[in-house]
Every structure is written in structure tokens, then in C-alpha cells.
Amino acid sequence: MQLIIRTYDLELRHTFRISRQSFDHKKVMVIELKQEKISGYGEASENPYYHHKLEDMIADLLSVKSEIERDSFKSLETPEVFWARMYPLLKHNLFALCALDIAYNDLYARGKNKKLYELWGYNINNNILSNFTIGIDSIENMVSKMKDTPWPIYKIKLGTNEDLKIVKALRKHTSAVFRIDANCAWSVEETLSNAVELKDLGVEFLEQPLPADALDDMKYLFKNCTLPLIADESCQIESDVDTCFGLFHGVNIKLVKCGGLTPARRMLRRAQELGMKKMVGCMTESSVGISAIAHLVPELDYVDMDGAILLRKDIAEGVSLENGKIVYSDINGTGVKLLDLKPITIHS
Image 1 (cartoon, one colour):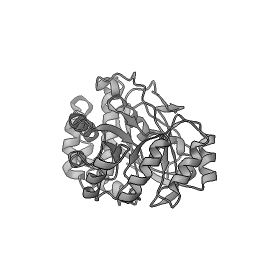
Image 2: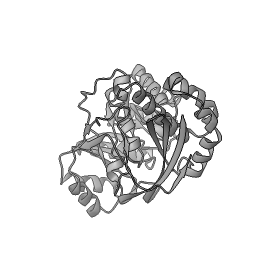
Image 3: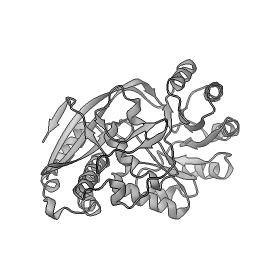
Image 4: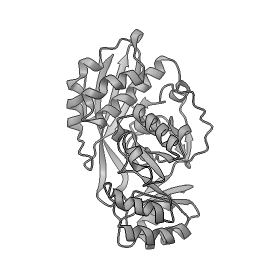
């Protein structure tokens, strides 16, 4: 098995702003695991909030290249066994492990001549729709973005001095479901007061209103907030699902934060056992990462997989969205085909 690493600088259609940062480009790493004539692909993006840079991901993967490449196709380990072997080597860099795990799941399913959801025994006749995200901007621009992309569900990023004014203005132009993501920017008092008005404005839930470590305050909100609360920054790794129980009504799992599809599936099972709502979200990434998320949808209550449609130009084809509806690829594995676009760097 051969490891190939490509890096890209993805340009967004619009500046993307949340409460703590804004950006126009996103650097990503795409891993290819190649075995004979079959390749599997995985992706992870650079993220300053979680202190992950591409150069560190690449260096960490290249440092264990011999361990990654040791499998032969005839003795290919299951993804669960492969992840367990890689985790001790990459547990300090779960973003890199995520890209590797997605690529391996893709390769393994293609080797079995199956789509990944087929390998898992999932039925994809799931009517869950993905939201489309509206980043923080002037009200005029946020309304314009919404009109440019008519959608049944919008995730609205907040964390400004006029959050309620923004939602009221957007509501005048659509009957779509709203989801609110404050990205840790609110206080307890803001959350409680905002939730009352937001519920009347057709908001489905609030995502991560408080800072990630404000667990005592979340316990109070859980008992008193009029809207359901979904954890994001507070739910990063597997053990966090149990920590979030009794503080949030559900968890939003990000593949890069937990280390890939393999641990994400365990987290979803644990959330199910605890009776929590289950969501998987994306970063700003190409169809490589987005396509992997799509295969988890049969297990989910909500999904946020709009990352690729926020880009000016995608670097891959795969699972796509049509007005929120998930359209699966005919290709096996995760369904990804890497386009012939020149990467910034290649390591092999």
C-alpha cells in the first residue's frame, strides 16, 4: 500500500466568518492510499482554533509511513483494526488520523467492491436534509447569500451585538428551518433570553452557545433553556459524549476532531445509548471529506455537510447536495473521484 499526500488551498465563494475568526481560503490535505489499481481518499483541513497545521499533519504521517504502508491487499486489515494500530502513533494529531482513517475506509470498501454504506449494512433511504450555512456578515449580505442559495434548512452563525435583529431580518425572506450556531460566543443570560425569541422565529436548536469548558453553566441551561442544545466544541473525542450527557440534548460530531469515521461511529452508538440527538458536521472542505460524512447519515438526526458548496471550485467529485437532499455517487467506497487539479504540494 502506498501513501500519497496532496495539499490544496481552497478558495471560498464568500468570506466565511464566525464569532472567533474569518477566512477566504482554507488549506487542506488530501491523502491517497493506493493498492494496486485501487485508491482510497481522505481529507483534513488546517484549523487554528484546534492548533492543527498542514505541515504538522504531513510530518506526522510521513514519520509513520512505513507502518501505514505495510499492509498488502491480500491481508488488508479491517478499518477498525487499522485505526487501533494507527491511534497510538497519531493520537496527538487526530486531524491527520482522520484523513488516514477516511482514506482507509474508502480503500477497504472499494476493495470489497462496495459502497461504504453497503459495507456497513446501512439503508440510505433517509430523508434527512443537510443545512446550508450563512456566516456572519452585514444583514444585507446575509439576506443576499440566503436568496442566492434557496434551501430548506439554514444554519446561521451568530455571536454579534445584533443577533436577534439578524434572525428577524432573515426570517422575513424565507420559511426555511433555522439552526443557530453561536460558536461559544454567548453568556448564560444571552442564551436564555435569545432562546425565547428564537423559538418563535422558527429556530430548531442552538449549537454550542457557551464556551466549551463552561460545563456547570451548561447544566443550568440544559434545565432551563426553551430550545434544544447541541454540543460542538464541547464534544471533540469519544469520552466527551458521556461528558455532554445531561448538559446538551445532542452532539455534533466532527470527523477531524475525533480521528475519523471509525471513532465517529462509536460516538454515534454511545449517543444513541444515552438517548441523545446525533449530528455530524463538516469543516470547510472539499467533496473528499463531505462524501465520507454522507455514509453516516442513516445513523443521524441532523447533518451539516455543506462545506464543498461553500467553495469557489471543488477539487473532487463525489456525494453532492441538491436543495439539501443528499445524492450519492455511483462510485464505490465513499464515492470520491479526485479531479485533475494541480495541488500545491505532493508527498509520496
